[in-house]
Image (cartoon, rainbow, N blue to C red; front, side, top):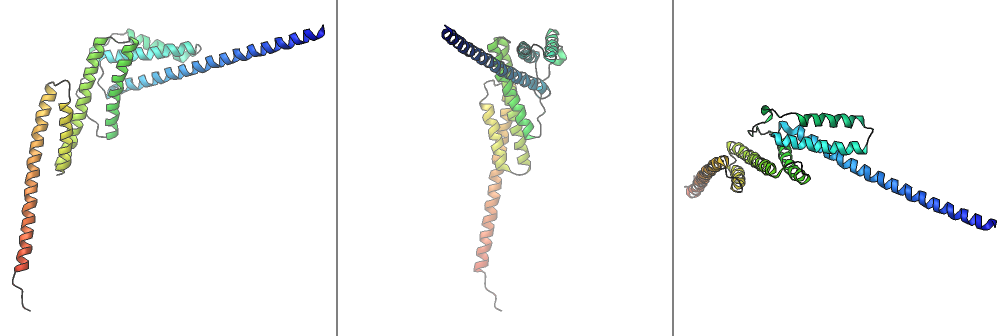
Length: 254
């Protein structure tokens, strides 16, 4: 009679151990998923704050600023749900929600007249920032944080801005090379600018006027290169004639 009881107890203990192990594994899996989700939301929040901090370099419209604030709020809500006791996150969420309720003042809209940075790394960062904004526009549209018409308008504006930065930087480099009499390099820079202008899907007044200016500059450079080649040929011929004259000149008798 004792043996069946012992066997039953052993079986019960095994079942309890298995259940406890399954429960622990399930909790560990849930905890891992929470950590992964929290890390994902943290990355989204940091990425969004970086874009918001870039307003000094990239002209922002109220629609873009509002979209990024909504993105920050979305990330913070998720983080608060995962970390209920985090007071700092709740405070930051409240601050952003208050900002979303405030009307956007007219003077918050900056113009598209950019002053290009002299440093190449800063210029690359500026272009990357615009590309990131365009990608974020599409992802936030898929999440429903921004309507289609606004996405189309903002993406067009950013595309034009990206074109201007590219063209102006090439023209700037071309002018520097030309002033240093590096006509071959100057021609390459202006040709790159012309390629960008020709590829524009929004041929506005800027594209038309800049294209005419770049074409004229390329013609001027071509003329200067021809003149330089002509001078080089004349100098070469002059040297060759001088060498021939020296070769056939009467030899002096010593």
